[in-house]
Amino acid sequence: MLLVVAYSRAARQALRNSCSTHEDVVVRRFGRAVLLRETEFGAFVACRLRERFGTDVEVERTEPLNEYRDVPARVREAAEAYEARDSPSTPYAKFAIGSAHPTPEEMRDAPLEE
Image: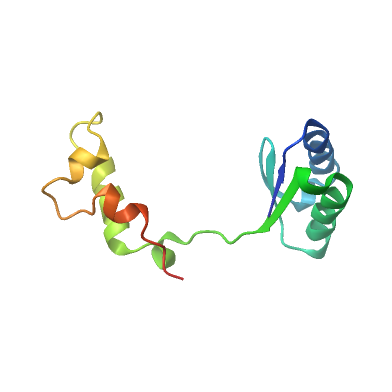
C-alpha cells in the first residue's frame, strides 16, 4: 500500500478531493493521511500530489502487519493476557511485573524481525 500524508491545508484539501474522485484506489482514510492501493494509478495519484505540493505531501510504501508472521509469540501472548486481565484499570507495566510477559522496557526498542 501507499501511505500519503498531507501537511498543509491546501494539500489536505487536494488529498480529500483526490480520494472522492478516485475512490477505487483508496484503501482507507485517516483525515490527513490516506492508504492507497499499490497500483500504478495509486502511485500516479500520490506522485501528482507530491509534484503539486512538494514537501507538504509525504509518500511512503507500507506493508500490512501480519501479527502471526511479524510479531513474536511472546508479544501476542502478552497482549492477549493483558486484555483478559481481571482489573481493566491496571497499567501494563504493573501487570507485567512478576509474570512471564515482557516489560514495556524490554519491548520498547526491540525491532520486529522481518
